[in-house]
Amino acid sequence: MTRPGWPAIIQGGMGVAISTWTLARAVSQAGQLGVVSGTGIDTVLVRRLQDGDPGGHVRRALAASPWPDLVNPVLKRFYRVQGRHPGEPYARLALWTLDTSRSRTSLAILAGFVEVWLAKAEHQGLVGINLLTKIALPNLAVLYGAMQAGVDVVLMGAGIPREIPGVLDSLAQHEPARMRCDVVGMSASEFPWIHFDPRDFDSSTTAALKRPAFFPIVASNSLATMLAKKANGSLEGFVVEGPTAGGHNAPPRGPKQYDAQGQPVYGQRDQVDWEALNALGYPFWMAGGFGSRKGLQFAQDHNAMGIQVGSLFAFCRESGLSPSLKTAVLNDVRTGRASVRTDPLASPTGFPFKVVQVPNTLSDNSLYASRDRICDIGYLREAFRDSKGRIQFRCAAEPIAAYVKKGGLADDTAGRKCLCNGLMATAGFPQSRRAGEELAIVTGGDALDEIRPLLLTGDSDYSAQDVIDYLTGL
Ligand SMILES: Cc1cc2nc3c(=O)[nH]c(=O)nc-3n(C[C@H](O)[C@H](O)[C@H](O)COP(=O)(O)O)c2cc1C
Image (cartoon, rainbow, N blue to C red; front, side, top):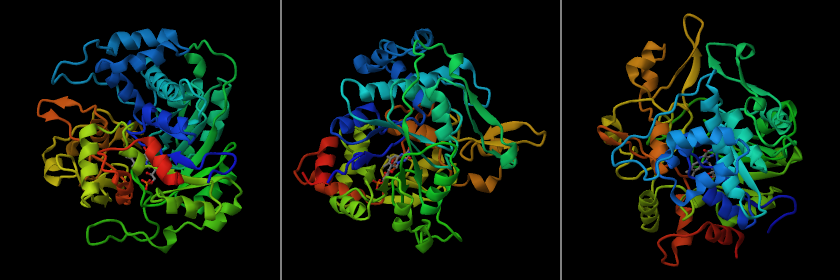
């Protein structure tokens, strides 16, 4: 079923640290496109080190990095041979701003490098990196690190990544790159630039880097058309993701409507015109509920290169999802009780976010309500211009008084969940607080039941290879 050029299956990028290097490597070695998540990866790097870096993988990758002078201070500050003491909180990193320090930025470069280097080690398969356009501040540094490790494809959605092709062209030549930072209260032409200059970080590699292929992730053929016309450089394909996909979803077009469970209702206007997309002439992959043989067949019957699949891979053996959560969800899938809610409020971004209902996680509203609001990771903060004209940052999931003091509306804080802390916990890096550990939040697609065929053998779990064999009909 494979068509020439690119693999038929893209394993979707899944943050935070769900599509880790272990998963991407397994998929890539099986001949498909394995994708690491670059979202929050600097925090993940330093938490792995504080947990003792089991297996020594992070240190192995850091030792191979072209920035030996950046590595030693990081190891000195974060690496704990024995890991943390029980209940000891992780060291807190400075939050990203427009003038983040060199040492803080270097963590993002190293983290992008480590994740891709490990995913690509000792084989020739293709590896991609996924980033969210909306989490703009760390992206240039993470991309440069990933490119130094030879990343083959960059995939970005959650926003309009118009400036990324030009960024990739510049970074491949070790030249300064920049992109705009959206700021509430400013017009697009006033948005400040996020700057990144590779020459600020002496690297032992000076030869031009491979310029990775760029696949924007879009929800509509009209956005694909706009990007094909207006991106500031070449793009090599599209992933087209519908509203049943795990993670964040694009909001419905047109007037807001909700079903009886308060989930956004999608309609005719959200349907993708596959013929129009095909007419653009780029390879494309369909995502969101296509993780089945039927899905792959449908995609290829409509001239797609194949499918991007998330949910099936998120719960497989090699993913970074915490084992106890995997077991809980797979038990529910096996017994037909798995349930996913499209929550229009949970994400501080305002985008709908899919939440799998799992006991003892933030899907339980009473547990959510009992959490003290705190914003100490801060990737999802939005930039805004304050009354004095300064650029500041706020998050709708931070303490309500602080959000309102920054000019945010109290109404906008309702139901917002701290995805930064929640998703770190889901990947096995919960922050310890006086009140206990941060609770997880699990995301997955509407079609979680599609996992069931992988559990029919009676096994309690399955591998990335099992997913690929199942999808390709082997
Ligand atoms: C646990 C999980 C986390 C995800 N995180 C991201 C992400 O960080 N960035 C992104 O572009 N897509 C993310 N996605 C979407 C996937 O990359 C993929 O497009 C989607 O899952 C495909 O639909 P499916 O879940 O029906 O297979 C996530 C999906 C899941 C299940």
